[in-house]
Length: 101
Image (cartoon, rainbow, N blue to C red; front, top):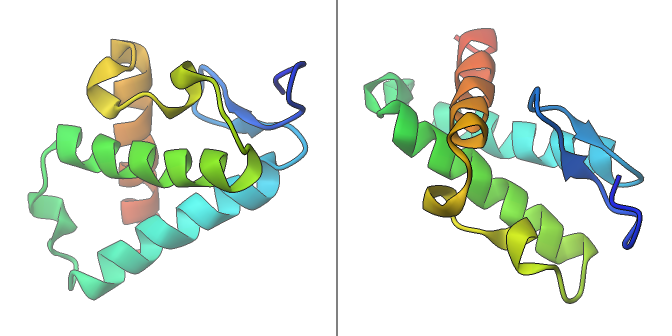
């Protein structure tokens, strides 16, 4: 949890911590699950980069939902994230994809 804002942050292992972490993680999970569903399972054709970018975008929306004026690092675009976080976001998408196939 960010000490300054009290809002969830994504951890190294891709989990979420903080006051809004569980709700935000559930929202992102639902968005990815719904995207997979409405795509007719064709998300398997997306690249890992595309999958990770989708998770990052969903997470950014949750940040904006809970923080009126977030720090720039909280809403950084996928390409601006460290490589480990880009990989973690892709892993999150693929874990949801496998759980819903």
